[in-house]
Image (cartoon, rainbow, N blue to C red; front, top):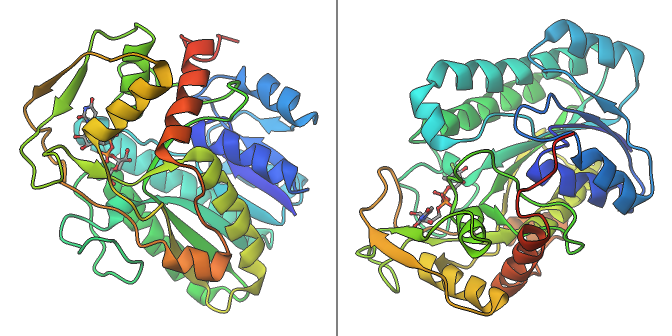
Length: 340
Ligand code: UFG
């Protein structure tokens, strides 16, 4: 298929671009580099041995989006582009609603106008809110989220469902990611957060490489195996493979919209992840336990059965793989991607 990948220069997008190319698909990227660097492109081309067409613009620009679809043919879209920092979304809700919803509206308008009717959407486990029973199952309703960022995912899932339901042939896969970590085994691409990392794995990696003094563990009095928060960490290579499986499944899907959890089905605590990273690095890493972070849930993980049965997809990488690959990327690129 010829696939337009929005946000294809970002962390999950870039790994998925490589997986698509490896599976014989043609890829076109649209990205405005709001949260990524243009130098990722050269690395993707080196790794794949292919030239990857790129359109550098903001998808909230409906005219540019329409122009792209009027001038090129696509069989499908994978929509990663969007703002994703939970804390920032609380400070700037309107920016999040505007950016994440408007870009989706532009895409959907152009897709329906030009007969592109297959879409894979980057959703999140955050749509299960804070009352869903663990493990999370795709049928759980009602969806809700505790941050404006998360609510954009809930809203976009709703919009896509309504549009697909009334558009003949339209097929949408809603991929609900758990906690993506890890990097390409080459060490050439990986997660490159701007500023202080919000998420656990990139923070640990920056402590290990000497960019941060120590990890702050947000609470050790949760009702979990060791008192620290438990999450379902999934290797970004597994996640990328999940996108390819979903894309290839879309044309055979009976219903217009289907949600799939992409997770391993296993919970790992903050301290377990830290100790796994220490094994990858070969020495202990400094940490201190501080107050709980507002809004954090104690523990959740995926029920990944549906993706196994319907997509034939399953996560295969272990926590030690995730840490070893993150460490290779971080140690070989201590400051992330170079400026372009
Ligand atoms: N944590 C720390 N110290 C840190 C960072 C995180 O102890 O410096 C802990 C958190 O308290 C939590 C765990 O590590 O227990 C994981 O935290 P992350 O910030 O890495 O991930 P979250 O599970 O909080 O967030 C993820 C995604 C969001 C999504 C959210 C809800 O990153 O996009 O899940 O599903 F919205």
